[in-house]
Image 1 (tube, rainbow, N blue to C red):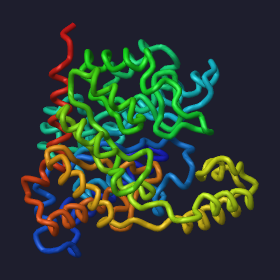
Image 2: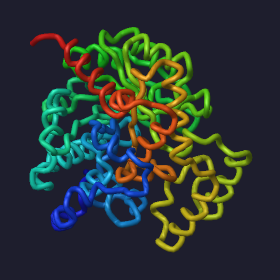
Image 3: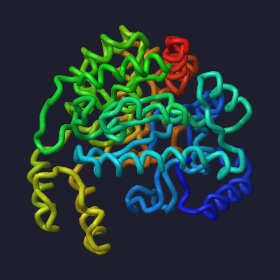
Image 4: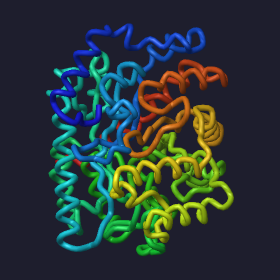
Length: 411
């Protein structure tokens, strides 16, 4: 469950769920016969979602005003466990920039740590794969804590230690934009590769994460960074929210060579329902986006919606209505195409689901956590067995988490 806007909202949601009753909350009668029952027998784990802080842009929330991973939506969708990320955006490499990122990261860690109390004990923080199984076996939702973007560490690897002490067990070095540790698959403002993958700090971080038993996330790295991480790590790695580059040529997606290398390391690729990674960019998209940004007085060099949240409300809403029409919409079938591709390429033991909800993700048919059973239904329709689904929906991720923790150095 992402952080509620107020404690009153959180308690109201919990009360509403209790009134519904667990069986009613989980019912989705429109699913094909047996799909819901199969889904409910699985341990369903989402390997990457964002935690929202008070004051997050309205666009970050679902149409009902709540998050895409609210407690009610998790229960309705039969989602048993998820990884909430302590994630920050990349900014200038200055004392002020680092301090602001550290403040945001600490606030997000505190927000995740507050979830058990806010949920009246329906959520419990997990630190191991065994914790996840124990917590979900007790009909609670297990939350693992992830970390994304070492920009919040500044240029000091030791600054990660408090996050580990706070429960972080999955960590990725970059987000959009290079930092002092590694190159990003989405360098900003034409920066290009800076470190040739990992910097010396980034290479030291791989060893430190291994020593701590932290599962390394390669989703946001460049191909060189992925390769170097795989060479340096003594444990399997995970891509917590990526897709297949053979299907859509996005720098955030993983090539066949990267998929093969992750498999060879024993790792897992978690597919994300993030529209631009699932559907090819339409012809003329960049020019259309530049024209739209120019119309609203936004910097044309930034090919995203960045800055639009600061527009006055009527202009902001009009901008986003036009922005959403520029790109074709993926469906749950498109999403499962990527799962299917990766499963066929490197095996069903090496693929899973990482939603990236609360950060712009979601497709038609899998728009929030409540619709997770539709993914199960689509996989069943394609011939995947219940044993396959148990791996895809959680077993594979928990296996590599346990392997990373087993590789930790004593002391």
